[in-house]
Amino acid sequence: MKITVKNAKLETVRTDAAVLTIIEGEKLGPVAARVDKALGGMVGKLIKRGEFTAKAGSVCLLYPEGKIAAERLIVVGLGKRADLTVDRLRLAAGKAAAVGRGAGVKNIALAAEGSSFAPEVAGQALAEGSTLGLYQFLRYKSKDESNGKKEIASMTVLTEKSFQVGALAKGVRTGETIAARAAMVRDMVNSPSADMTPTVIAGIAKGLARKLRLKVQVLERDRMRKLGMGALLGVASGSVQPPKFIIVEYRGGGKKPFIALVGKAITFDSGGISLKPPDNMDKMKDDMSGGAAVLGAIANVAALRLPLNVVALVPATENMPSGSAFKPGDVLRTMSGKTIEILNTDAEGRLILADALAYACRYKPAVIVDIATLTGACRVALGQEATGMVGTSEKFKQKMREAGEKTGERVWELPLWDAYQDLIKSDIADMKNTGGRDGGVITAACLLSKFVEKYPWVHLDIACTAWAEKDRPYTPKGASGIGCRLLTQFLRDYEKKH
Ligand code: BES
Ligand code: MN
Ligand code: ZN
View 1 (cartoon, helix red, strand yellow):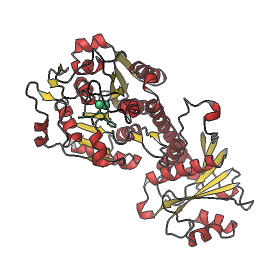
View 2 (view 1 turned 90 degrees about the vertical axis):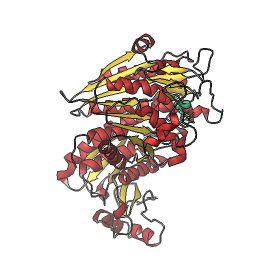
View 3 (view 1 turned 90 degrees about the horizontal axis):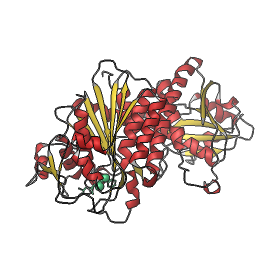
View 4 (view 1 turned 45 degrees about the vertical axis):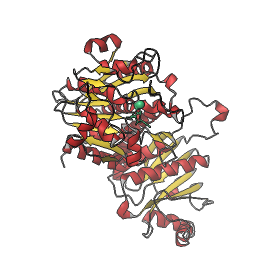
């Protein structure tokens, strides 16, 4: 979809569908008031009768029949002004675009009245919301099966303030860039594991590097062996797919220290010898969501040319049962030298991350952020509304929280108190890889904490948020692409002082 910005009045724009946003419980803004007047008071009447509430996400489709230039009018609620966040704008744009597509329109024109956000911020949110709201995963649908949903070819963002056109357009371009990467992440995660192997992910990383200012290096099994990555190799031992350790570097920050992003990429998690039950095992193709997110984020950093040095590390492998698979009772020696007793081969994410975090320390990073579909316990704790966060740096946890609010990819912190560390003590090794049923998000993080040395660290558990079980306004059911926008925002604000 092509997005442009235009200085024009909504009621004069010839389009298949004009989109108008309205704040709940306030008198109509100037644009809405003019449109309402042209329509003989129809909008006001709908609100008065309670047929349109203007609550966040509420929407109604009207046919102006020549009273304004647009063929259709889509009215979208932004909710109450006191609750108005940037994400509400994203949500409204997603809703409007989806309704427009449902009506089969080719183009829409949108005036975001009522939002008082800076034009750059608003432009970005509108581009992201509409692009991501229209996202579909059609790679495996033959033509006639693709729901017959026609694509919207273009969207025009309208403003009546000519001096805002430039800033709005800049925001739109940023939003398009970021949304395109988030859609790439969704595509990767939605893809079946047979087509999204470690080798394929390494190929995608190389492709990004070719297009953007990125350096990529892919370590094969023999290099992993030389580095002593016994945990990653242990998890990989049951699979016929060769594991890959993917390193992507972006240098835009001169002599500044690196920021390390680490993403779990288990391309299929069967549980290994501790095999998972069959129900929902198909969803375990999403266990590479963290790896995909860090690749999307570093691509954004390069596309936006941020003045930072960033490295993305992606340990990628399947977790499969076989005659050569690692087993409960085994002890794996990690790259750091620390040993881990395996009680459950299904707690494999923390194992591959242990080696990746140790590798991250070689960069002497300013901060390490890891992101992983790590524990089912995260879903029990937080449901689908928040990503679990654990970490050692108050400053960076706060920054992550703020990035979460801005992007709508919200995070919620759980404690990393010393007392929890006792739960992963092993009788024969330095630690064991499970801590029992209690505090599953935290005990997994406890294990990770032993591999980040003294470096400031934030851990994100996206097991609960990587996959949307139901349609949301700009996140259709399926892979959410979570983490890509969150990390991008975190990095964009990295040097901002508050
Ligand atoms: N990839 C899973 C976590 C997961 C579960 C993600 C459900 C998405 C949905 C992870 O590797 C795993 O299997 N974790 C185990 C750990 C347990 C054995 C300590 C879990 O959460 O059950
Ligand atoms: Mn597992
Ligand atoms: Zn897993």
